[in-house]
Length: 468
Image 1 (cartoon, rainbow, N blue to C red):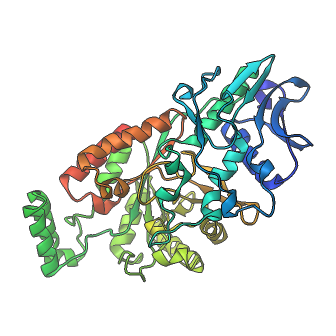
Image 2 (cartoon, rainbow, N blue to C red):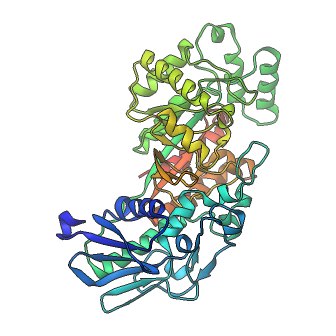
């Protein structure tokens, strides 16, 4: 970066796909490496980073993806590659996990990950092309696959087919570029950031459903099936007439203070995403103008935590609803005396589609989205653990929106058969992958999944283990 190194960088790229190249460079070189650079287009077959006034030294990368993509093939099924080969060549640069092998999305797995000589480093991976492919969710647009809720399943992804779903592959590529830049120009790139935790909660059901006989049956299940007498007593207490008069303290789903306590103990602040509409059977059934909800929003804001939007099930198909729901949340926050610094949230049921969901969020005036994770698995859907700007591959333009990727949702683990006692260990494994690249561990835990004592213990251990 010029302020520290005294000179700016030059990024030379081939012609074609100018907007996509500029986007990838802004993310990789600008945001993540902290380089002050100029993008220049010239006739060449690779990508090269040099410094102005010092053309003899540089970092070169292949141009495999964007250079080969013709207009006729762009975003077509045939342009999606197969699972990448793994390079087992050791890197002389000491980049993270280089000795364990690295999947090469675009490039040659037969060439070294990095070769250095005479002030020049040649990388064997097309990092900028990989950034466009992974961050833009190219495969999901070019070869759309959907489950019964219209979601892209993890099993359809190249990350699953290639065996790297639980590795932040793009982050590892960026660290390889960082190591190359530091090798050629020591001290030029900004140091890798420290790993952090982003804790969030989708408020589908702020209070447990079921009154009268239905609630009594659930309480019986707490005692007989779940062997949790304390939960049974709490549920029975929540069924009394005082609960209907507005005192919800005994409701088993009212775990908001517990979640904020755990976040604060870990040194982080949580984000609570509220629903503003409940017209679909799978939506939550509550109103933002309910006095108890308004008081809850006020308490969250007073403790310094974040309030955001959890768009309803139908918004994925009817994006115009997003603007209406955001306006309802704005009014509720104003009534509660809460003023979020940023407006963001996460799609209900993770019903997110590339790139139409991003487009709708940007048009609604939201600042960030936190939906990019899998409903059926944990991992790095877009290859990164780092918040980043988004790019619409269909229109070829960057959007005024940022993505905060989702790494772990507790439901994806529990529904896959992982026992509650084993959840902290699985979270720790993902945290270790994030730690290696200085990323952000995004953990989603629903308030309604903290009813049983074992789930509360798993949550506290997971947050404590993933905290900074």
